[in-house]
Image (cartoon, rainbow, N blue to C red):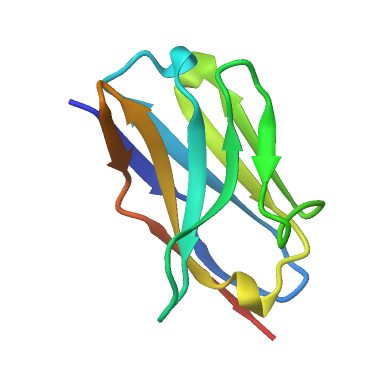
Amino acid sequence: QVQLVESGGGSVQAGGSLRLSCAASGFIFSFNAMAWYRQAPGKQRDLVADISSGGSTNYAGSVKGRFTISRDNAKNTVYLQMNSLKPEDTAVYYCNTFAYGITYWGKGTLVTVSS
């Protein structure tokens, strides 16, 4: 059974930092690309960043230079380091992967950035 469990969300002032974690289980983590998405109220769920099994990364233009996605295969964990946070980063952040022919999502972790 594939499971993705996010943690690290919270409330922070603009300009601050947070690090999100996603603990994965139920598949061979090192073989899979992983991604972070986010969904703000009234908005669609959008890709924030992804990382391939080989470590190649991709970022949405709105977060490029501020966020960093990384993975620790020994811990079956993917991270999203978020720096210089802005109020527009406020959203529920979701961990995502594709395994056994199915797309999987975590339940999400809320990030609130106040001005």
